[in-house]
Length: 432
Image 1 (spheres, rainbow, N blue to C red):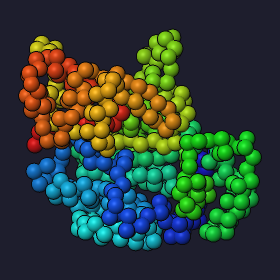
Image 2 (image 1 turned 120 degrees about the vertical axis):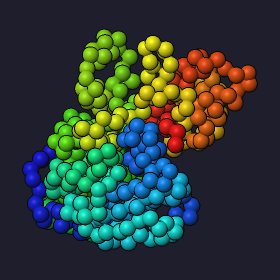
Image 3 (image 1 turned 30 degrees about the vertical axis):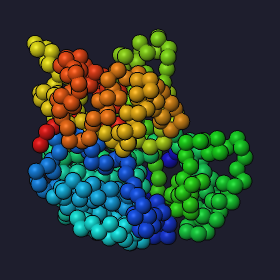
Image 4 (image 1 turned 30 degrees about the horizontal axis):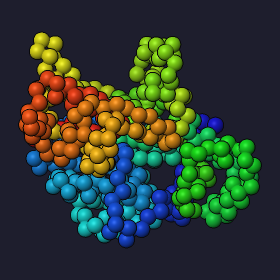
């Protein structure tokens, strides 16, 4: 795959592509039926991974958020709606090159009656600084389409508040096997073609691919099948596109003066889940965090995109984790007593999860075709059924009859949290 610096012509083609094929295809009327939520950018994740469980917008504190390369609006709608739902004093700036994409995003925001978004048409590389600095920047699936991704990430870093962070997504190389073969074939066949003409050639080429072709054999990419013309074009015909391995993600982040907080989901980047070999696991235990994530990508083979959260390199805040104090043994979260923390669930129905866990005290997790089962402590279902995003853990303990003893109860909480937080399903928030 070529790493040569792309031309300005390719940059203009990118803009033209999204004017003709706004991606992903969305209809404003669908906002009446559902809210599309995902990673990065779900606010519960942002608080967990970037702000260490302390919501910077609580108690009415103003928040400034940038959606860099907002496309047809999934991220800006999610963030704006979540901000309104929790009564946050948030101003969200949307910037995108494509006027057609902006029109769709704006119609979706208007359909919901959201008033907390400012829309800007243009390049966020040039314009982000005019509207910042930002507490949070969301840039999903955009940097890998820039003529100079490194310059793009540095521009975002320059617009970020010292204590803020970003949620990013870039394409992953190994899980997209076959995609770049298709793009190379298209370049060889019709390097100058664009728009509908390029789509027609691409579809004809794809339909005639032999069953041995890597794209035909890759079950982990499907936008060309399920995403309509816009999905087909975005996946297979893009003329400004690169992908990253884990090591390249780390280098990409560090050259911009940032630190990688976590990939999402953390469990997916744990190589131990992909092997049962005791000798291999022993070797893995000696690797650094970066090396372990790189090994997980190699072992899994199905990671098509890297979703991750970053902060500035000198930002000391870490994602939420439960620890113990040596002298007393009391469980803590960033020096705060675990008992006062407020648990909340990610994008999952708590009642359904509790009912499922109640059957056999375990949870089955699926990562793009790879499934694994994790055992949970006995009280997990009862704890989960009481999680509502407002009760503290001590409130939950006090609701049990008979009242559980403190140490065994919080030991089970810690074990439950270890599994569910690694799967991006459960988070802890500091009290307001």
